Image (cartoon, rainbow, N blue to C red):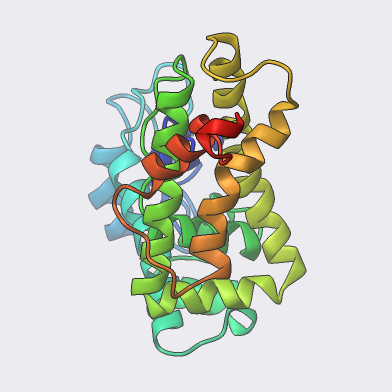
Length: 266
């Protein structure tokens, strides 16, 4: 729900840009240490063929790319391609019937055509990778203003609705969530990385609505948040056959603002 986080670029930011097309010294992603630039394991013809492209004029082959006078290396396109290949590999394995618990980093790397080190540079463990796979399959979080109250709250409620629709329409996504809930470590990872930040974003929107005079200021904000989010979660999670009409977010907000008691009793 917090749609301003720039999902597709988050790994590059977390890993200091991860702009290398390979390991320090010019080895491609997934290459072993024995085949790094300057290693005796590399054939001389291959070394001479690549030296002009990887080392500036006058710098001996094997000089680290991080040398102060070396030009910055432009590796983001290859890094983005590797990340996309890894996510697609996990999805392909799951579509083939592999259970989450049975997937290993080795199997994922082999399917993606990368080395295990390429995966570990982006994700610290398998659970963190799986969370990103789920986020990749879900609809993107919509952008919110970060300054509005009820308007932002409505956008985030609508996002809950569209994710509910996505789970209903994707058997694979539905199956992944069912498996996640049976693996506490994975579910806790998803909760900490996805659910908790979205809940915090909703709470902040409620606080902004209270401060703007759009909602009562004599109620606990967490209770107000639960009153708004609860009906949507009931429809999307607990009642998988319940309708999710396009105007559901507006109907929930209107019902809560108007109250449920008959007009004569208010």
